[in-house]
Length: 249
Image (cartoon, rainbow, N blue to C red; front, side, top):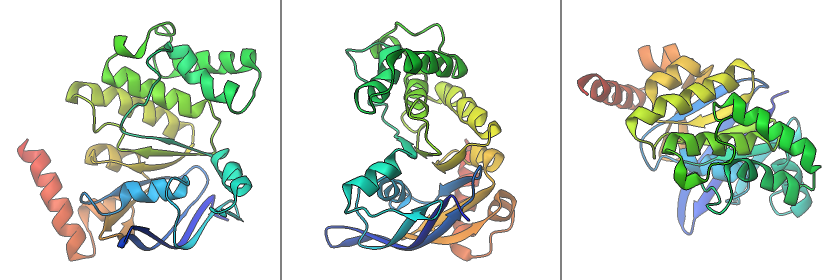
């Protein structure tokens, strides 16, 4: 049984169809990356899975339990098993790093403060910020803030982590530190669904890669297949342009 199973998913913004029949199954511990041109529906798919945009058709199931996006209890159960990290860090500027990581588990989930603090300290150490517990967001680099955002998501103890272009807002020299953090999670066999334009990283970390265009998954395969021997012309064109641009840069 897939840990995350998406069947026939359709979503719209007003009258515009942004997801048009998405089918995708992800096993426990698997890392799947979504690539494709801007506007292809990659980030929208993560928003629908996490309940930020309600689908108009299709199903999303977690370990066999279908999410009813119109039912608060069903959505709450799903959100207890998922966490999403966006390209914008969305940290609380009036809270230090430690409090930013602790605030949701303590105030929303009503977990024991001492237990959460111990976990938060461990997570911040894991992402290389053990010496920044008392720093405030405006005292951190973009890469450091994004690593705090990842630690904050992990403190929710998700079964699946959704990562939405988490390096796109960073200066180039800061990208590597965030990608190294994600590689740590991959090494621990956490289930990851990643939207990224960092093709070398996608190739290195993913078990499978899905190429999206026009609201559909047009090709799904191993990184080797997608990057070295894509089966359809649309994928070949995208990959050749992206890799050609990277090489030229």
